[in-house]
Length: 135
Ligand code: AMP
Ligand code: ZN
Image (cartoon, rainbow, N blue to C red; front, top):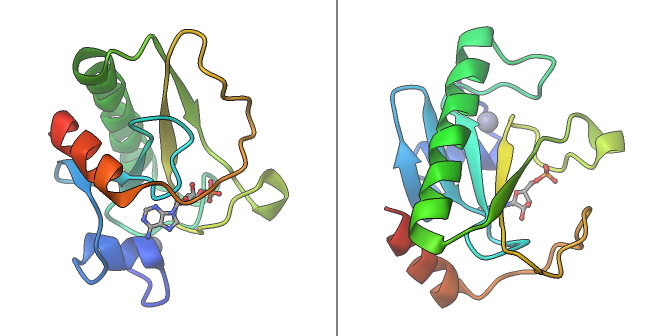
């Protein structure tokens, strides 16, 4: 169910802080600490699965549906003009946290983001404010 060495399992268990913006029976969504754009969130299944190859179908379905819900929320609350969903599977594909997650990256017309982005720590106050707008 959970992996004691996994940082996302610790967030799910409430043992590590996170700006949680959405949750349901199977999933949790929280703000990425190094956002590519304003409102960048991660959706994860509560049940630990390493990656796309291992996740159970019902958790995959719930995670994608939660990502769709968040895509609508960033459009409605943040005025996003578009959204990139991103999943990395395996270190060759740049996966760095080995608990399946879908990045929900809001896009704004003319924004400077070019994928893949170079992650850099975001401003904690700004992330908290944006999380509040999404809840
Ligand atoms: P990936 O490279 O696709 O595995 O993405 C991992 C993402 O997790 C990166 O965008 C990190 O910024 C993000 N991340 C790592 N640790 C945390 C954390 N404690 N809280 C929120 N986001 C995190
Ligand atoms: Zn985990």
